[in-house]
Image 1 (cartoon, rainbow, N blue to C red):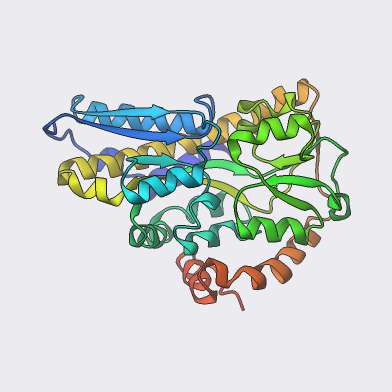
Image 2 (cartoon, one colour):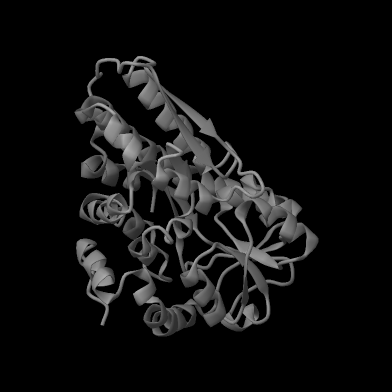
Length: 340
């Protein structure tokens, strides 16, 4: 799918912030909003953070200042940052969807393996009616989703050997997020999942505590995993890595209606920038990594991976992500057939 195709899709109706957001009167008194993010500024998080910051500060004539803090420190993981947002002790946070599931399990349905077949389905599933449904779940838990950050399918990398078929996964130890669905998925694939905080992943790979991890090309390059013994990467499409930018509902409710709308529009604007960056830069990152020695493989039997995921992981994890009704409610919103 070309970049032009995706842009056309967005402009057709998903992102209308430019039309809806006229310059609002400056908010008073002066307010600062802090966003905590785990990845470096050179990643997709930086694209979202910078776009969101610029939009808000421009539209409020600087009355609202946005402070972006990049790169998680040891002991300060994404799950903890999301919990702080829920409590209202941190304004905003951006992180992987799996780390927000403990606060609202229905959002965990987005981690179900092979939920999305391609990027078109991901975009459709994070805009319009599906996005409204997901935000309904979020606000009930105390936070509001402003942006869905697109960071690509979670390709699998390791330091042992190329992975071209399901049996190649057997016995390999992978760092995974704190997600029951991800743990079940890797076990179903025959691998050994290991829960390691994101901020400690590079060291764990470099020391050999784990054999591999899963991330898209842009994040892989930004985190310099090629310098942490990751020599082999496989383009498997079992899950798309979505990273929500959320604001505390307590913080949001204290703002004026005008400022709230600016934040909503800024989120849509940043989401568009994130998608464009992903489409444009993923291939460039891949070329750079391959030129540096990364060996990229394709699966010979991905239908088998999908079969294992749907038959084993979905039934096992259905209740964990809100139940079959919640899954089918989301599938219906996406215009898909129900899961039987």
